[in-house]
Image (cartoon, rainbow, N blue to C red):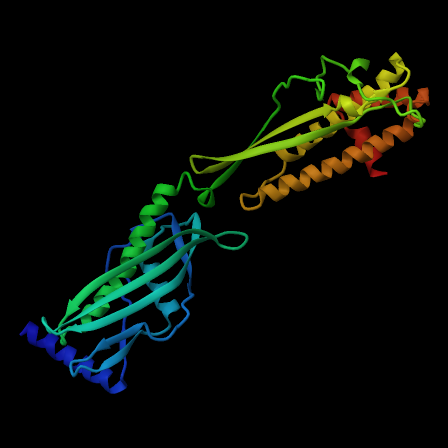
Length: 363
């Protein structure tokens, strides 16, 4: 009796669809137990070139009729994915699904008198962040089937199985990648290091216990320059980011240095060497302030690199501004009273008291 009921139901279904000359398949969410996840699906987008029918099947009379998904494919698939996962009270990531392919092909096997078909599903999974969604992986699956003329429900069953397979496929992938894939990172950590560097003839690194000497100034003096000496100083910021147990760890190394081959002196003196050393000290102060700024900035996981670059550029401009103020305030070292005053300000700033420096920068 149960078989008879199913048979009659299918006859009515086919009769209705044949008259409409179209077979409509349902995506049936929630047939399988929901997967426990720490992510949720937030958007499904139909990126197929042809967005109407997904293919054709044969009716019992042997005529081809088009097949489509009931309702809007994006809405139907979205409901399927939503019902397919259980993310509890919160979700760490939001996932976007793009449908690239959903195609059905069917033919009649004259020997078996069965209809043989194949359904192909192609999806892309993306994680949604502050900017454009980031591609995670693609799913491409296909299932072949055979059916009699009375088993149109087989087609619907295969379509639903394909979508369910894609759910499981992505869930397995994301659970394996959750702690190592940068796009899935949950937190951010900044590590700033300053390794002791060996100075060379080409580069002298800043060391408090190793002040400059005139032998560090190796370039040929410029006879036409009004200055007695010139020093080339700067700082660098280099970094690498790695994944560590689901966190992005950004390591930054800061180096303060002077270039001997671009620094020169005409008439060496202790007073003149102090003036050039203070140029070097100014760069050290700027580097210290950059470290403080970075360590006290709430760096965002999605655009921390832009924040770090912006902080670096701001510090570089600050360095140039302070060097100009120092040269003006000491009249390039000729104003001894001004030099003495700046010596005190720089020593204070090297000790971490930046009030006077900040006051000068605000002018």
